Length: 95
Image 1 (cartoon, one colour):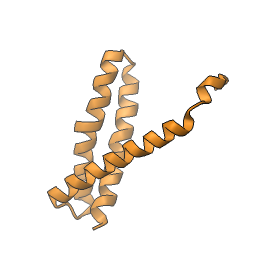
Image 2 (tube, helix red, strand yellow):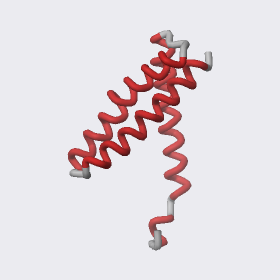
Image 3 (cartoon, helix red, strand yellow):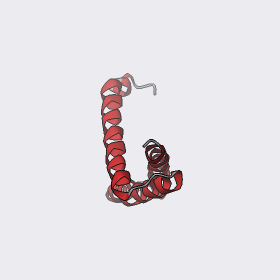
Image 4 (cartoon, one colour):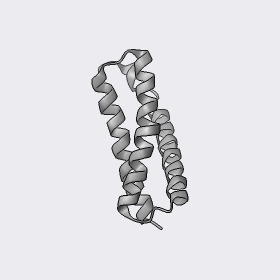
């Protein structure tokens, strides 16, 4: 990061990232409530399904049109799937 212009706006990026992550967790909490998931395994399953079917598929769809390398599909999609699984476990156990 030697480019000084690349460092501008980091506060805005972090703010919107927090808002979007909160919205993902809120949606996951709604799914977990509707599914009646109250164990860590049920939360992990709901998180995995949401992560793969919503988060990873949306990222990979965008990356297809941007012609990004397949490794980025796996890394960024996987990161979101793991995050949804962890959030699912936490939300299911927090009832």
